[in-house]
Length: 253
Image (cartoon, rainbow, N blue to C red; front, side, top):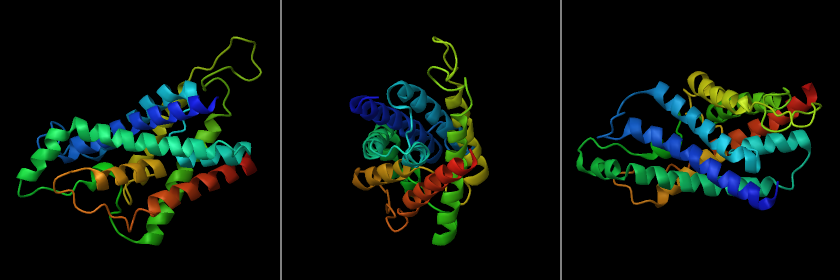
């Protein structure tokens, strides 16, 4: 993969991920949305479909990481760290772009939010926040949830025939089904349903930090604080979780 392919793939794929993810959060949160108050199940599936669309789109170019924690886990597994800064930079740019696109899609709803006496802060559309603010507990939640994402992602790569591209050891011209991305998408839904309750399951530093920065900069009515005091947890927790998942995978497999 060339540097240009990696950059374009991760920017495009992460932008699609955040467009779908922030989009479903906006759909559920904002007044005058047809999906208003449709609930957590809708949010988890929206994020899962975002992974599905973003990863399938970017996989031929960059492998479809879309997540610095995944990139770190892969680097621990392979020992190849030289491309890590490129991947993470592209993921951050894509996350900001996707957040801006979601804002544009729901621009009228964001503006209408300013006209209501019961208007709510909009940070939850873009970034995560804990239900109970306990930094240590929140950090542990993000570490465990991210390890629960990255370890299976690495393991899926060892199952011949489910990835995209030639099957190792198979005759020339035999390619995998690409179903691994579908499995990762379902995994993300499962993490949201099972482990997302305490912190909103960032499990991805770019997914939280890029849109949080976008929230801080965009002219959103009644947007409230961007909560920078909490912002380090959905960055540090997933990175530690990805690192630990890579170490466990190397030790076990």
